[in-house]
Image (cartoon, rainbow, N blue to C red):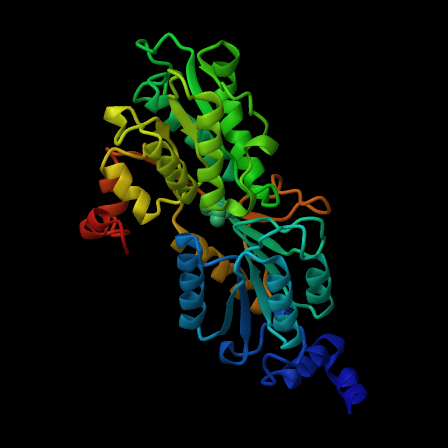
Length: 385
Ligand code: BGC
């Protein structure tokens, strides 16, 4: 039968017919639905692996991706892994065994999923790395993220601005304090590729001021390894800040600023500072503390003049990009990348789609976050969603 068809219609048309015949079996068939483009969304399931529910952002990311995919008719298997690598590996193994048609993965440790990625490739399941790069594997199809280097640049610029080194146009200020201004540095988890880009962007921006003596790091802890907070844990950041205060600021030493890479860490650092008698607000001597993610509790602290800044990354837009990429693969197409150079994962340069980020300060949070409808004024006041 098949050979007759081949003779009559030609190989290409026969292939189309064969693939059409597989259609309708849906997820679980292992038929490589990522490639045929003919199955109906209702017959397809997308596995979405998220790292943790302890950070507000991942809850929003997961919720937005799920909603976006369901709106298009796809089934969704959304799993959170409690920041535990074996749990995340098992969840993805299971998604593959159950025959998901595509995977969207926000990893805990970007290098720990190579065997899952092998298995996904063998089953012809397209894999989209979400926000965090999946490394050491050629089996990563696409990457959606923010401009992570720019996150670090903006964190450092907001720190320099808060310290009075830069003016409101983010140029060197004519009235910059003499210095040295004392700062301490925090970084994210070393197994998250983003941490390195955030750090690089921040340090390259701070470097000239560290070199000319405007800034100093009294603890001497100025390498990413010394500054890193394993698994991005708030308590660990608080503890490290407490230790820094005890070891280096027990006398009259002034601490002027802290580079903090994410809002929960900023709040841990602020708690340590408050407990040690700093503040309560920047006006009363709380050091300039940066952040990331524009979490509601931190926006409330920014409103109150306690935390200095954060970086807004609109996770709704990132979720849209992930949905768009998944849909492209499921329709047998390639998603459109806007960066094909930056994200070398150690095996391949992963085609990526990068979104822009915005610095948030006390005088612009209303415009960026409230006027745009991201948060209500009541949420900012209560510090809760
Ligand atoms: C994300 C940040 C987040 C951090 C901790 C990073 O990979 O890009 O937005 O704050 O992980 O969850």
